[in-house]
Image (cartoon, rainbow, N blue to C red; front, side):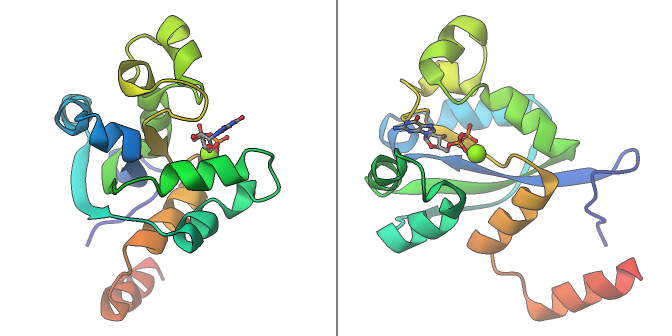
Length: 160
Ligand code: GDP
Ligand code: MG
C-alpha cells in the first residue's frame, strides 16, 4: 500500500494538474506531458472532462467573491480539460514550481522554462492548474476522482 504524505523521505506526494481549455485546444498536451515525465512525475490517473458552470464554481469556490470569478468560470467551461493525478516526492511544491507564476505573460519573462510561459497567454489564460498545498491537492483529487470506499477504508486502517 502506498503512503501518501508530504513528510518523510522517499515517499511520493500526490498533486492535481489540469490542462485548461486553452492548453488542450492549443495542442499543448503532448509537450506538457513530456515536461511532466522528464521532471520525474508519474501520471497515475487522467481524465478528459467538460466542466459545467456548477462544477467550475465548486472547484474554484475559494475565488467566488473575486472580481474575476465570472470570467474564470467562463474560461474553465469554454472547452474540455485534462485532469491528472501527478506523483513525486514533494510533488505539490515541485509541480507549482514547474507550472510557474499565475500570470503567464510575466512568466515568459521571469520563468521562461515554466509550463505557463510555454503555453499560457496572460493572468487568466495560463493553460494549467496546480494544487497550492497538500490539503488542496487531496481535496481537488477527491473532487475529480472518487475513490472506492473499500480502498479508503483500507488506507485509513493502514494509517492507524
Ligand atoms: P493559481 O493558483 O496560480 O492558478 O492562481 P489563483 O488560485 O490565484 O487563481 C485561479 C485562476 O484564476 C488562475 O490560474 C487564473 O486562470 C485565474 N485568475 C487569477 N487571477 C486572475 C485575475 O486577476 N483575472 C482573471 N481574469 N483571471 C485570474
Ligand atoms: Mg490557486
